[in-house]
Amino acid sequence: MAVVDAASFGVEKVKAPSLALALTEGGRALAELVSLQGASPLLSFAPKGDGHPVMVLPGFLAGGGTTGPLRRFLTSKGYETFCWGLGRNLGPLAIGPEGELLAQRLESIHRKMKRKVSLVGWSLGGIMARELAKRYPKLVRQVISLGSPFGENPRANHAWRVYQAVTGQELDPVKMREAFGDLALPPSGIPTTAIFSKQDGVAAWQTCIERRSRLTDNIEVYGSHCGLGVNPSVHFAIADRLALPEKEWQPFDRTAATWRRFVYPSSGH
Image (cartoon, rainbow, N blue to C red; front, side, top):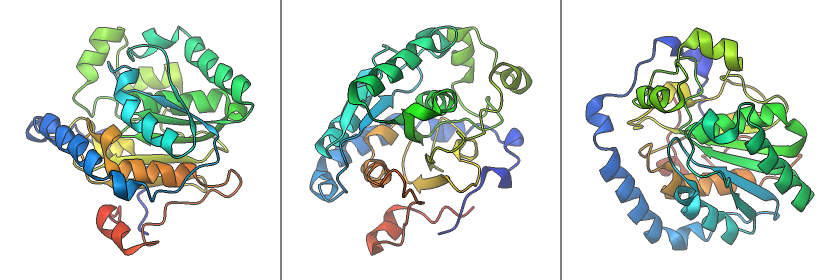
């Protein structure tokens, strides 16, 4: 499998996707939702899990309802699935000044289940999931992000102006690093997978991939940014990742079956 490494790109020079591609997001996401219904028989063959808890975090301005299809799928695979439970994702405003509300949610799930929690985050939710794992590594089993622009150029997307207006937080690379540290740095000691699409019309895909390391992986799919949470290939990839034994994590194998080679690109660039 060819490996995509964020360090291979001058991500600070990467720009947002074309406006033409962004304008197709709605139609493509709807098509992915429709395809999810037809893919149900095939997804029944996705590996089942061991029942450990999984919390799913929504994207910017989205609420827990948007993660419903993914959570229902994961529940069908045997996981104890949890909504993030904090309403619409308004960035820092939704999780408290120090992220304490999100931390409390993680601690509550861990305390209830008495097992480490896997975090799946869509877009901004993925950035939050990665940062949460950095702060509470003993509570987190693994992290999976979906089109999450944690790369070094926070303005390489079509949502940054809205984000600034809603949160009052300036998305300046220098100020962001001073406030949050290196967002592109993956959680230490925790398996972390970035699922991304080169057809993403909202965020530059180059900012949505992990740095290469022993516990990181990047899985490329075909799809839109707004449809990642209802994309059948994304659902299968997430199930594949979550089903790995805790001590036996390994990168995604797109050659394990012939059909995977058609569904999952080689991730070359």
